[in-house]
Figure 1 (tube, one colour):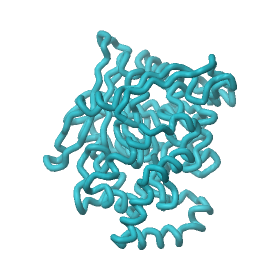
Figure 2 (cartoon, helix red, strand yellow):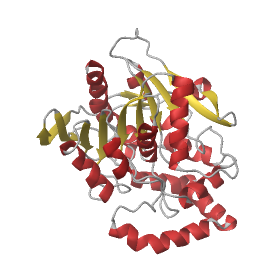
Figure 3 (tube, rainbow, N blue to C red):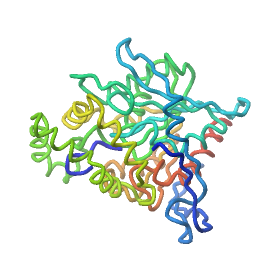
Figure 4 (cartoon, rainbow, N blue to C red):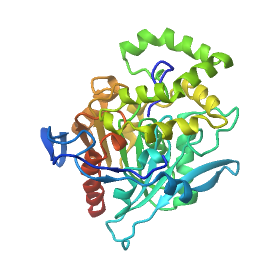
Length: 364
């Protein structure tokens, strides 16, 4: 998820199923060459929990199979890998899943099995999140996360990889792709890409400009340890967190106790408060609008139309929805009734677009 201001924001295996037969319909919005911009939606007969059966990886499996990698010989970074049970074919890809603010590897639990049927799947906890280190005094930036991603590709994956990110994870992937020197980024999948590490990213948005004095005041308050600790404890309270997530998700049924634990658990680890403060008060990072034209690799953009953090009618949303008519390497799909975290909100709609795109990428 995208970094929120302080006012905003398990263990059992999970199978998300529906109680009524559903279909996924696609309404064409516009067409340019072979890049189709459509709005995807589930029929009204579908249960809110999704348009099909989505089998999630057990959190226990993620925990037991996770590995550690020493970044720069100093920081322990947690990652997970699951290979395809099928024989590797030319259609097989290697993908790296990069979560958003406050999340971690388990936020992809509903996607790993679907992807790993034909592809090798890596997932990573960015520094400051999940089971990765949260070093005291570390200054978190979008650039440092992008560097981490590129170093991970170079040292661990060691093959061309498709980066799949959500929110600030998407932005980190964009920066990594723009800075990659070894041609290890094969393509990008951006799920509700954030405009910056925090709300100070300004894209000629009068709403942010109007709130800038307040945001700067919040920065000042967050740098006061006692105030920051009180606010952080309030945000990570499980009942408050569930309310926040309910506002972030379009599909309220997927805001369950497991999701709350995925977000709340790591927030109670040592260094989590420092990471929270550093991310919210740090620089927003490179402007994706300036970086995107540099990306020549294939890019798939999926965007939930119920996203209140990076709304379609906001400057970032408007920019990304304009790209298919400007850049030949971009494909965009808007997912109706979906919030800021499509991969967990409506994984069935994400898979409906993502899996064929991966297969098509293999044939080009």
